[in-house]
Structures are given as structure tokens and as C-alpha cells.
Length: 179
Image 1 (cartoon, rainbow, N blue to C red):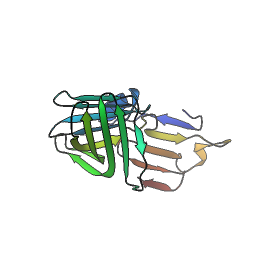
Image 2 (tube, rainbow, N blue to C red):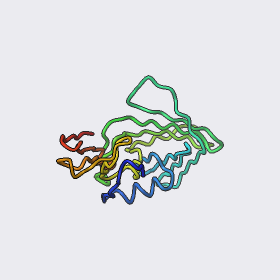
Image 3 (spheres, rainbow, N blue to C red):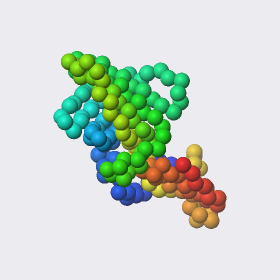
Image 4 (cartoon, one colour):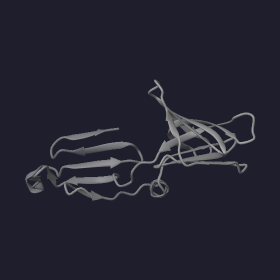
């Protein structure tokens, strides 16, 4: 924790699930229905795909492909198991099975070794937020200046909800909020 701030933990229904993903090094996860499948992308750029019928694809590295489209990211991996292409499109996506809302629509194509064509999988996904940032931060020091909270109308604070993508707070007088 930075010495300029005091962190107060907050509780959220998704916190345990997302914290576990973060702890396991997962920075992006996606899932789909009809057929059910899941993808996890790790910090080290490895990827793990699993479908309902037991098909799996694991790669120790994926490459981000160059694109002029600012609202999508495409990754590609080729190894002895086959080839996978994953496209993350920044658009709201709803999972009908869990009633959950996601920030990215995800499409992936997988061609396992021995198959002639790619299988297509579509679903939703999110980047995993860093849980160490979530919560209410009380400002106790700015640069080398210690904040004397007893001389202020309000204690300066910053609240970050990484699960809802919201920020709010005050500077000791004025309020602010946003995404």
C-alpha cells in the first residue's frame, strides 16, 4: 500500500470469483453457451480453452495481432495442438445463462490438430481487475504534505469499485464521480 493512502477494503458479490482469477494469474476470462466453453488468458500470455465436450487447447504464448480497429483486440496462437484465434470486441455482452453483463463480446476460432476446419465459439468476457486497487482510499499525504483532516470540511477520499468500473470521492470540499 502506498504510504500516501490508507486503504479500506470493500465487499462485493463478484470479489471472491475475480480475486481467485487474479491470484491464479488470469487477466482475461471468457465464456459461452451453445455450446458451453471457457477461455482464460494469463499474465504471461498463456491461454487455456475448454469446451463442454472435453476439447481443450493450451498454449504457453499468444501473439496480439496488429489492427487499426481501436475497439477490438485479436490474439493468435499456433502450437502442436493446433491453432486458435481470439477476438475481443469492446461492446456490451450479456450471458443468458448467468444473467451477467460483460464488457467484451468474444469470438474464437479453434482448429485442433487433425481437423480440417475451424470450430467457432462466441460468448462474452471481461478483463480481471486488480483487486488491490478496489475500495475506499483516504488521502493522508500528498507529495510531502501531510493532510490534517481536522482542518478540512471533509476527509479527502477516493473510492474505486473495480467490479462496477466506478470511481468517486472528494478533495476535501468538492465531490467527483465517473467511470
